Structure formats: C-alpha cells, structure tokens
Length: 446
Image (cartoon, rainbow, N blue to C red; front, side):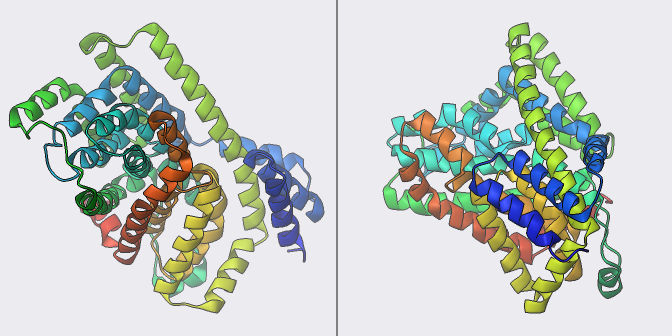
C-alpha cells in the first residue's frame, strides 16, 4: 500500500462532504482520486460498478420497495394500523403505545423507516392530538417508533448489509483465535432481526409508559373491547396475513428473500384488486414511479460505495484500522461501546444505506478480530443506525413527523431524546447478549 492512500481517500471524501457534495459524488470522486494516486486504470471503476449490481440477492431491493408501496396504496397498511389502534384502550399511554405497535406491524411490510413514519403518522398523530397528547410528544413518539421499520424484517438495510458483508472474509488470525465464523445471508439477517426488533420496541414502550404516566396521557376515550379488536382483525385479515406469507416462507426455507419479494408483489396486487378493491392502475403507476426513484437512488450510492469499499480492501485499510482499535483495547465490551458510539454519531449525519455500505468493510474486520458473529454485528449495526432517523441534523423521521403534526423540528427533537436513550439502552442489551439475535436462526437450522 502506498504511504498516503488513506489520507487521499478519506481526505477527498471529507472535503467533498464539507463542501456539500452528494454522498454518491463524494464516494465516487474519493475512490477515483485514490485510484489515480495508486496508478490504477480508472476503467476498473466501471467494472466494479457493474459487478456491484449483478447479484441475485440485490433483486430483492426494488421488489420489496415496490411491495411496500403497493401495500400502502392497496389499503393493507391502514388496516394494520387499525388493528394496533383497537388495542389502545383507556390505559396510560395507550394510544401512543398503539402507535409503537402500529410501526412494528407496518415495519413488517415496508422495510423503511421514513415510509413507516409517514404511513402510521398520518393516522395516529392526529388521533393522539385529538385525545389530549401534545403535538411534540405525538410527533416524537411516531418518529422514534418509525425507526423500527428497518429493524423488523423484511428490511432494506438488512439486504444492503447482507450484500456488503458477503464478500468480506474473516482474517485467518481471527479464525485461528475464535474458530470458523458463520456465513452471512439475507435470510439469516431477516430471521435474526425479529427478536431484536421486539427488544427495541419493548424499550420504547417502557419509556412511553413512564413518560405518559408523568404527563397524564391516556389511550382512547373508548374502553378496550374484544369485539372491536376482533372486528379490526377480521377487516384486516388479509393485511395481517401478508407478513405471515412473506416471512413465513423465508423462515421455513420455502423461498429466498428475493423470491419472497416477488410473491409479496403478486399477493398485494391480488388483495388490492380483487379483495379490498382499492388498487387501480393509477395507484400502481404511482408505486412504480416511487420504486424507480428510490431504487435508482440506492443503486447509485451502491455503485460508488462498492468502488470505495474495494479500494479500502485492496489496500488493507480495514486491517490497519482494526489494528489501531485493537491497539487501544481488546476488551469486547469496550469494542462494542466504541462501535455503537461511532454508529450513533454516523447515523446523525449520514443516510443509513450509505453508512452501511461505507462502514461494513471498515468495521466488520474489527468485529471478526474480537470474535463477534457477523450476523450479530449486522443486527446491532442496523439497530444503532435506526436511531439516526430520530436524531438531528439528518433525522428523516423528524422532518416527516414535523410536516404531519405542524410542530417544529427543534421541539420534536428535544422531546424525542428520551426515546433515543431508551433505544440506545436496548441496543447495548442486544450487543451484550448475542443469543437475542442468534437464537432464532439457530433454532430454524441456519
């Protein structure tokens, strides 16, 4: 490795980010500068970019995006939220707790934090305000719970992590010290995310109860009714069945995540056209347009991040970084604290998918060296980056919740801070107890 390639690569990237360049441009130009410094032929960039989108698992990305958009247009998301709302009752924090549960349900079909916040927020934020919740609390609860959209499978960031981590083999020294590591697959990531998602939701529900008790917030004005709940389940039966079909097929090995995404599209089309009859040709075209825009944006970042990551790996930069960190400490708890702290900061300033594609080649080798399982590491990474949706300055969920509630982003950010603390505490629990992520995949034979 040439002496100053690290400085050229990261220096160019940092300079362009400070100047306000888009993340795709910053990654691509930084990689090009490093390649020119090393004397490599720039045509390699085109070859790397092409190979980055030639994988079968990547087909799941636009498919799940389209499935989520169609489910919202077909009325599935609204019915899922109605089921969660029927559980509110007059209890302390009941309506805001129902919002968190609704985000949990919707996350099982959307795979996106902002999409979850928008879909649930449009129905639940006005409902909370009508029942006496302050605008900032209603908005902050939804923004915080919206992050569950990327933790509960199927998750778009889990797909990107799986693709990014598949090509990174553990160092022989790590294998010698800790034994053989399991391989990374998107199916394993989906299965592993279920219980950590429940832990994250549990942390939010506990914090919500404590805060609502202090503020005197209750649920809906109606009493909890089994009849109302069963009616909501009956009306939303086909919506509730969607996550069962998608995730059940993956968990039982009947089909791959990519195949599951295609099945989800056809399932939604069938339900939306023939059962709920809310899906017309215009809505399908809108969903296709949204999918094209979002998938194209993600693929552009993937092009640039793949080239950036390849430059890192070819010059053993992750090994140097791992050596530097391990030179400070080899205590696994201290390593976890450093990793989670870094990811929390990165999540505040960088889009989740870009952060995953940039940081996996850098941080996964460190995880291998201290014996952290790659599936466990990926789940903790995604859980930690999900907090970035509710923290400024990037905080996409904050902007969406602000637009729906009419409250300022500054006030929502302050009100959301205790939820971010609760989420961080849940992340440390998931990190320190690996079986929360690894038990279910092992049980299902992965």
